[in-house]
Image (cartoon, rainbow, N blue to C red; front, top):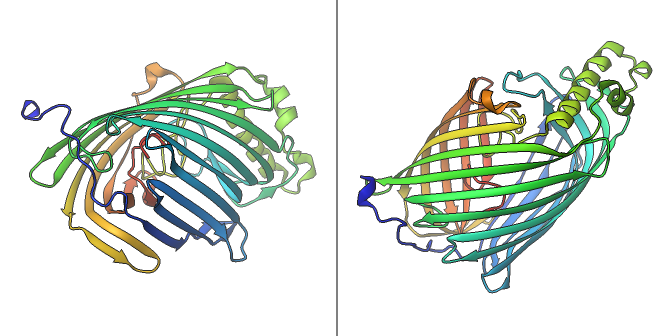
Length: 403
């Protein structure tokens, strides 16, 4: 069956891939025990040639604030050089889990922080988008206001609350599939290298190398089977503090000043353990959330190495070209798709132990391709329960490669 297909397959263009499309929707954020907020997001695809515009802003009073803007794939030199840039400015809660594959779903602490970042990315595509090169630079900073434990206790006497970083990213994609947007057959290989440098010498700098391989196999008329293999490896490039006492003096929570001393000491130990192990062993791309291990929270599993394997069946049950104008959602719909997936993954600081214990996730998804954007809803189940994902773009992608 494999030998019956031409390789690489003939390249085709997606109908209506350059037609303008839009979505305006509220994005309610609710974090139990901390607060809530309702930013409004708007995206416009193909606003200028292949450029996509994304904006989000909190207009209603709430506990969290979101400001976001990005312009993607603006053609600087025809289609050969594409520019993306943008910024984020958040006042929001973030969750940090314990390290390793054995962490429990309540083994975390949460931070309320002011977070901001800026990025600029250059992409270059050749041979009908079969080859892509990417270069990206981003900088960001955060200031912690409070730290919460799993029971909702909060602590604000935070030592070293500020953190700044610079990310340098270089990557490539080799796309030997029949279609850049919605492949049915072929092979896609993505490689991404990221260097993270912290402005604070107490934190270790590290590099991450990601490899993502996806194979597509067609069968029947509109069915496709997808197999994805992902590997991430990280290493320290410049050492920060690795002595526990010195680290505790720099990053403690001043628990003697808090009313709930024992609860404070517990969350302090969790925070120090998080950053101390990260200083010693770095951090590869985490599993959980939008792209991989969808039944688990964002960043749920992490260590110095990670791996993920996915088998996904996709059925395009409608490929009728349909203009849409629902005021808040519009464009030209070309595909309606259902999917069924099963994925396994693991993380470990020791590469020899990476596949000794695996977590699994399985579920169903529904997708619509409208004016070159993939709108998707995935519902997955794992050991932590059932988790829904609503997002734009296919899962299993590698950063901005191919996006």
